[in-house]
Amino acid sequence: MLKYNVTLEGKTVLVTGAAGFIGANLVKRLFADINDIRVVGIDSITDYYDVNIKYERLSEIEALGRDWTFVKGNIADKALIEQLFTDYRPAVVVNLAAQAGVRYSITNPDAYIESNLLGFYNILEACRHHEVEHLVYASSSSVYGSNKKVPYSTDDKVDNPVSLYAATKKSNELMAHAYSKLYDIPSTGLRFFTVYGPAGRPDMAYFGFTNKLREGKTIQIFNYGNCKRDFTYVDDIVEGVVRVMQHAPERRKGEDGLPVPPYKVYNIGNSNPENLLDFVTILQEELIAAGVLPADYDFEAHKELVPMQPGDVPVTYADTTPLEEDFGFRPNTSLREGLRRFAKWYANYYGKI
Image (cartoon, rainbow, N blue to C red):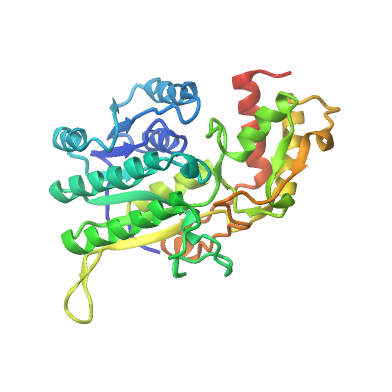
């Protein structure tokens, strides 16, 4: 296991995308774990999905009464980002701000170029000109595209993205590598695998399915139910992020005497892909148990098996061996336990039947 070389105690941490699903949970976890920490959050709070959920997440952070500063703004605004770094001088930066979603990237490509490329470039430039100890940033399992080899390893070649979203995330890794090489910026990319949980993103399948089932609508199950996903509970993702934050890739020289870029990439996934039909069965059972759906709900009448969508992949499956070896951790929340927590949250937030 690696030894931690970044102390978060007494430091300022910048979290971009702080009103987002992972971002808000990360901020709460940092305040729970560390007594003396300042967290600065930035989020543009776009209407890609219900902004009320984003404001609810922020209100939960505010209620903690900690050293928390929130800025509503876009990381694509270079002047704003430079001002943030000048004013708050973050020691650690966690870049989670991004336009997410595979299918949305087909119809709204501009949003991905602005946030995922221009925005990330602005973060890299700010890290370059300020003394940042560690940059941690979100990549995605989407970079593996239609890779036939499973489980997916960070050693695999990932040069064949099947969506613009995937292409922007792979670009983030390439850009980070260049900045690590050129300017000695320690950076770690994290390829997240299908993150879910309470107060998650309504565009994700489990949330969208729940909304439709509750409204008596039919849900579409892609690839005729033959998709497999490595569903990863949000607390497991956050656990991985917090551990990775505390070890920056070390600056060192290679055998040729030249600097080796202080750069790493890890998968964070459950390493246990679930069939989509099994997934929706468990979801239905937990929604009934939580009182979101009636006990006699006719699930068969509300599902439709349809072909694969453009940009989607049939399977995601994470090899998390390097994460286990370096940080002694692998995600382990079962799908049923994770969906049970989501169903209880949904019942509390939206009300029971």
